Image (cartoon, rainbow, N blue to C red; front, side, top):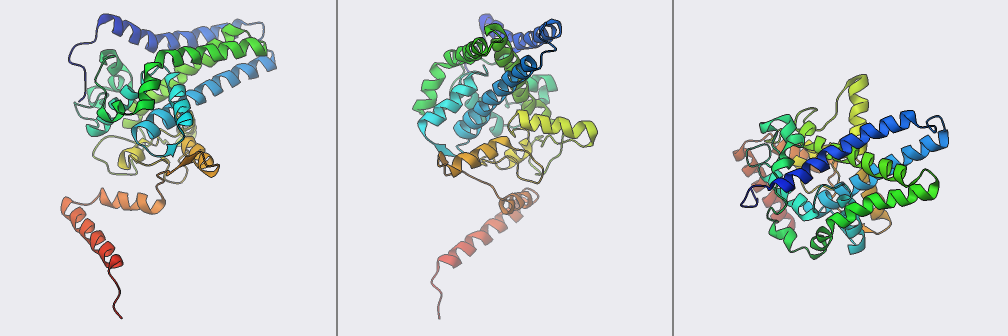
Length: 329
């Protein structure tokens, strides 16, 4: 596991706890403020507040999903530097840390999934996986060389806190312009949106390694967070929407490079939909889509013994050689 050589200083732990707990406090404060506000029965105000929250959540989660995760970490698509930089900056607005260290942690997660070396292994408890692991995660932990050599990602990472501040300043300014005030703009489009975006990300690490179904027999505890029933399915649908499809996590662990995490019928994946739209207008390319045939083949592979996998690989290799060989008449 790539970590710094010393324990996390107390001041870093204090900042981490603030990042974890302040959004929770702000959600409670926002609920009380709304319930006692003279505008609570004013429909335009309520709709504006809802819009600030939804846009704030989705902007940050697309930044995490398309910027930090599918883009930087897994190279699931290629795009222009300006768009790549925008996604990374939006991810920084979630205050989940520097993109390059986020990606480094995620690589370690895949390398040691659900084992002791996994930064947020559920083997150490649900709440450790959810967010407890952050308390001991050092700010200066070593960056994976792959990301250290990524000039754009390093440049965006250098200004992480500036992007985070901008993520609060922009909704504050828009709030003042549209009439709800700078404080309400920052509260709903900043604090409350950060709470939901971050809890969604934390849930992928905890809930999507605990609850749901497994479409692939991976050697870890990853799940696709899809529950049944009148309460379970709407909750699953909401979490898939909020996390931009990241809760299709078992699929992702099975085929890490896939641009689409939703691979089977009914698996909502907003990030994949966004990529398809961007691909159509030429803003992304070399998108690593996984179709039903590849997904089914991977399902078979994961149920095979090592000997069966070796025989299957040899068969595929021979088939490729046969295609390349000239046909005799």
